[in-house]
Amino acid sequence: MMSLETIDQMTREAGLEACEQQQKPYLIWPQDLEAWKRGEGFPIPFPMIGDYVPEGWEADGEALFVDTSGMGSPGESALTLPQLFEKLEVGRGYAFTQQGQFQAYLQKFKQVQ
Image 1 (cartoon, rainbow, N blue to C red):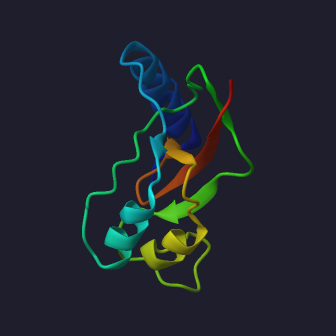
Image 2 (tube, rainbow, N blue to C red; image 1 turned 120 degrees about the horizontal axis):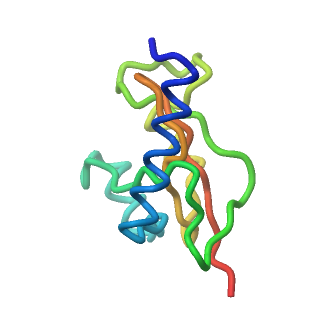
């Protein structure tokens, strides 16, 4: 298990790298969700942006806590892939903001003018 200090350091480093690469949240299209629910289109293309918030985007609500191992169960606190697919919204962007060994926070973003 990773320490909180390690996760925080990884988050800062990911934020710096995302800023340098000008990464943006991945915008969900209807065909994305349809494909993922059919088991196609993997790996899911959400970038890890850490604490970076790209220009023209803002966080929208609480981050989703998701299982990244593929071994999670529906009764656990981290969302499984099928549970995650039910929470994702078409027309919103998503990016990982914090990641541990087996779980991560996936933040929903909206575009702003």
